[in-house]
Image 1: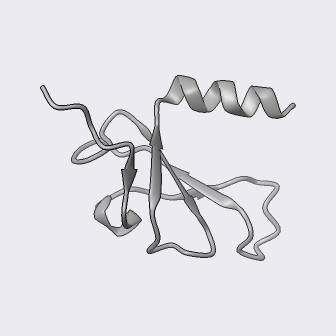
Image 2: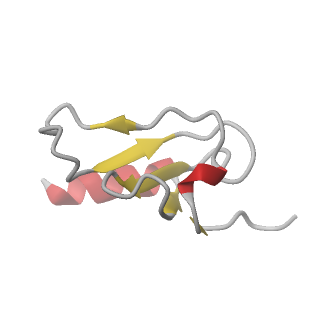
Length: 74
C-alpha cells in the first residue's frame, strides 16, 4: 500500500470537501482553513490551507497531529 501524499500542490484537488474557518476569524482572509476529505487523496487526514490562496497547496496531517499542534499553541 502506498502512503498518501502529505501535501497537495493545489487544494482544488480535494473534491467535495467543506472548508471551515475558526469562529475567531475576522473574515479578513488571514487565517487557515481545514477540511476532512472522506475520499480520494487525503482520505482520513485533515487538510489545511491558507485562506488567502484557496487554490494553493494543502497540507495533509493526521487528526491526532493537528490536535497536538493546536494544544501546543495554548
